[in-house]
Image (cartoon, rainbow, N blue to C red; front, side, top):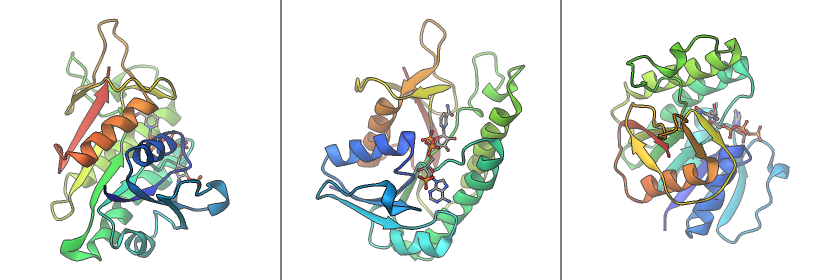
Length: 216
Ligand SMILES: NC(=O)c1ccc[n+]([C@@H]2O[C@H](COP(=O)([O-])OP(=O)(O)OC[C@H]3O[C@@H](n4cnc5c(N)ncnc54)[C@H](OP(=O)(O)O)[C@@H]3O)[C@@H](O)[C@H]2O)c1
């Protein structure tokens, strides 16, 4: 059993991470901006108010935890620019306040920077809408930042190109920087299976100081 502080627990992916963590008996502190949005209906769940963009808030909730997980997002393109890399910097700064006892950090990333078989990256595709490109590059900037960090045990988990709520199958594949595609050419993962992959990594660390990705 791990003690987990979870940012973004009210979001599409964060809720699945929360459910998967509770299903496995972990003790979760969900850090939300508006506590009215989440009911602590499980004895292993505590809901507290906090802001991922405030390093002092991060340090306060991270103290005494084993792992901090962040599944935060910022809505449309400009929202992500305002949130994703600043959140990465704030999370790392907050954990640094805690020194060598700082918990491990696992963050939800983006698929844009993943490599395709032809050597291009997902965000190189023609015709992508600007707001989506902005989101992809916000995650790319955050990953660039994490890759400079050696004193905090971070892991960044990129979803497949498409992630949406669906079946919890428990079957998935992982790779490092290469986009995972199925034989039919699609790149997808349900948010439920993404949550399984994240909790598997949390319980059995394989990717400290690395980005990895999950898909079918
Ligand atoms: N294929 C891909 O690469 C792919 C696809 C989908 C999503 N993603 C990424 O996955 C992440 C999660 O996506 P999602 O669809 O689950 O997002 P979502 O449903 O919009 O949820 C976003 C979460 O972030 C929280 N949040 C935003 N700003 C915050 C702040 N300053 N402090 C604390 N919490 C904050 C929100 O909390 P409130 O309830 O307070 O608003 C919400 O819980 C995003 O970064 C997104 O870009 C990647």
